[in-house]
Image (cartoon, rainbow, N blue to C red):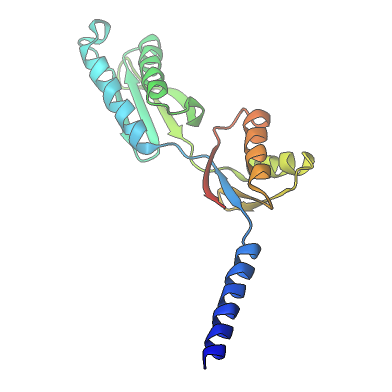
Length: 184
């Protein structure tokens, strides 16, 4: 009976080691804005606009809805100033301004102008293909696969994955990339 118990323990140890060898280290490349920080930056912008002398008595404002920011002002010049306030607050809150996609400036009732700014979340398919191509062209010992709005990178060694992260930061500067779900 003791020999049978010892045999089952040895077998379960072998299975645990076998499963650990199969699981390869990986991480996900994503492009997602921290919406809580965006909300905080919008609130700070609203406070500054309310207290600044050059915006007193004007209809200048910033509104946040889902994945959109709406900037309203009395003139295009004021609109640009409100946008500057917003981008400064976003930068202070460590939100990359490359997430913002400017819409057209539209005239709204009277002299008011309005601009809708979309907040991009997720990696588009063309950008995901570019990331996969950059990884494959680097001849590193990692594989990349597109997983919806993210790219999963797997490799045999943790060092290879860290080198892939550094390479992506350097070779793909036009996208705000984040790396999460690192599994060792």
